[in-house]
Image 1 (cartoon, rainbow, N blue to C red):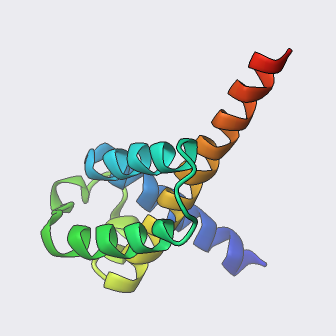
Image 2 (cartoon, rainbow, N blue to C red):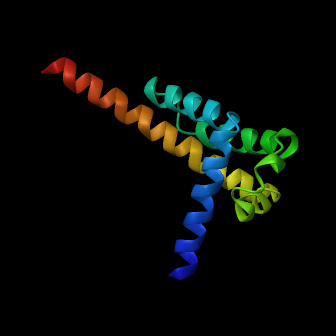
Length: 109
């Protein structure tokens, strides 16, 4: 149980680092748009893998090492980066999907 809590904290710190770097925030906004406009669900994992590979190759987080040292060192592993982008894209897709649901619900009433 303690391992799960630590892992969740590490993933949330890594998501925060990706948002600070702006690339993660852009991917999150794209995922929100995909969810709002009802894109097929299989696009979300493809987006997560593609953005995770791009972030692993080209995004440099070394200037943030003083803030969250463990999350930055975990982001050096490509599988962890893809997992972080899965969390970002699935969260964004769900927010966009729920946003569309609530907008339609508000229009009906």
